[in-house]
Amino acid sequence: MTANHPNKGDPSPRSKLFWLGWTLTILAGLFLFFGAINSILLTETATAGLAKMEYPAASARPIGIVLLVSVVLYLIPNTAVLGAILLTGYLGGAVATHVRAGDPLTNVLFPVVFGAVVWLGIFFRDARVRAIVPWRA
Amino acid sequence: MPTPSPSNTPLALAGWTLSAAVGIFLLFSAGTKLLRTPAVLAEFEHLGYTESAILAIAVAQTVGIVLYLLPRTGVLGATLVTAYMGGGAAVHLRAGDDVLLPIVTAILAWTGLVLRDHRVHSVMPWRTSFTHTAPPGAQSHRSLEP
Image 1 (cartoon, rainbow over the protein chains, first blue to last red):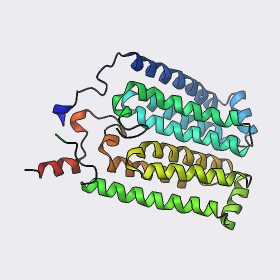
Image 2: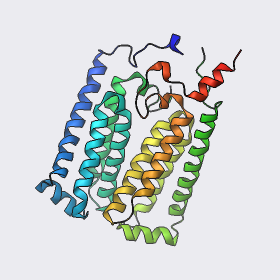
Image 3: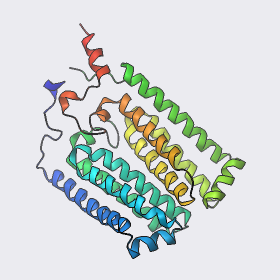
Image 4: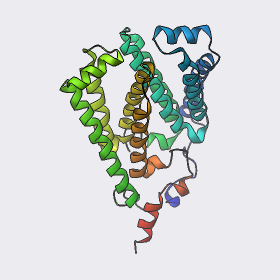
């Protein structure tokens, strides 16, 4: 095994794609991080948004904590894939919520695009992710 | 040196078995939606969905499962199934229901995939160095070679 593979996941870790990957990762991560903090601190924006979608008020903090844990795992390189999977589940929840509320297609697609950005972030910076996503090389 | 064949190890066999079990369960679930069984209609009403959403949801579910069961698109399919299950967890949370089933289903789907494909195993649940990417089953398989 070892003879055929370099030690690092990406043979050219400082390529432009690598930095594009990190840029997307940080942008998505920051946006979701602030979303999580909003939910945990029960800000007006977060509670009003959940109330509009008819979620129980008590669910705000658990949702924020789940999102925060997912974002942190996503930002740590060694657990980035696990984090991306958890964020996918979170964003799938957003899609389902917008579908249920009968929102316009743009609202429904926003979390979908966001999920793509989350995955592109790790796709660009890790050759091992590129080897299995979107199909196995 | 060839990559250890993912279908030849006991762990990979367990992974494919688990994947098939998850796949059958979810295809059955999609089938009941396509047939609009009374249980499905009642559930959609309970969750506050319009009946017109059933077909699109069933199609999305089926696409995810089929991609999950194909060897080359397992990760993409598992990702779509995860989003679907995240949606399931969210709408049940909203309705005040138990959210365990969709979460457990997603965990089982990824467990099946990690077991059946050592390349997924190498990045899940955390990244390992390449010297440790082959699962124990693959290593024992390799040691049997002359």
